[in-house]
Image 1: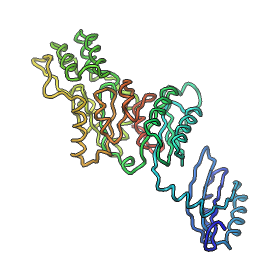
Image 2: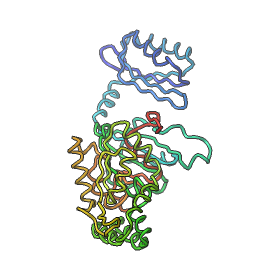
Image 3: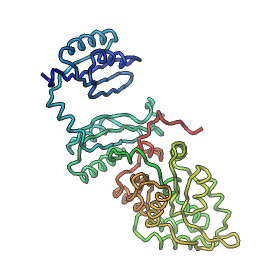
Image 4: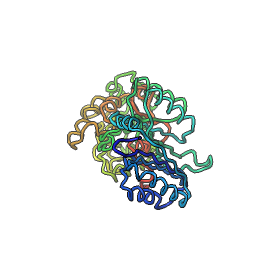
Length: 411
């Protein structure tokens, strides 16, 4: 038989229109014959149920179980199939349980069959198996007029160990570039489910500008400062030296300009929604910026940020002096601050998240449990394990496993 000691292993598959009480009706029959449920899984797609149950039943009862289930399926208007499972096949399945599990998240404005197909091929090519697929975003509206701000995200639960993790990362990055999507590949462990501290870069991450460029425009040195900024963010010149050069060009600018800029900062798409959810669910939030404290504190008041570390501009008689106070917050300092805040909050480094766009963000992206390059420069994307380039900042929520159905929108 399919199992020892006068028992049988039966795989039951039920498909059809979902309705309340269906699972209860099926498991009630199994309970009546004291069947043991060894595995169970259910999915509901567009109100269509797919229910699978692997059970162990006494050999003398298995015929009655299948007969009653057939009658019940007919009564409920669903399809049911039975498959005997051998002891060998069951033990092989059990042996798979010790293998590593990963979560592969796909994200974009919309997701196509081609995108999913190509990603699934990469997974299969690495000798891994997809256990489950679920959609994290809400139902996608029909019509082209909705596409500008739509979000689409699906999550694969994957079992196994990649044969070549580096090659897999390269293949997924190439697909992300070619097919206009984003991905995250994370080990499915308790740290992934218990992130507690998230650190953000500010300029070109939380806001869609570089504040130093805005100051420079008003000081009449916009082109000079922007050129230095771009070289620094690409990693072509030392950040501290570039910072010193740019600040010097701001000498004589009236400090009242800073308030004017702060009140008109272009907030990144999805930032308000992201902050609302993070605060609601108890995350500690930090801004670690190579920009300026004045603007970080402005955003701190807007969102209730817990920590702000940035650079302090020196002022005298209502004007900028062209100098700064204290040490520059560069890439190395950002990583140090992330570690320090994690220690203060008693958070394991594996429970931390870092989000940024520039070369000076790479150190903190590298040490965080989850480092995310956001609409980042090519060098940053190439060195980050996760990136978001297709949608707004609230895409971070899906990499954390949030579903739209869990979330209330900001009031």
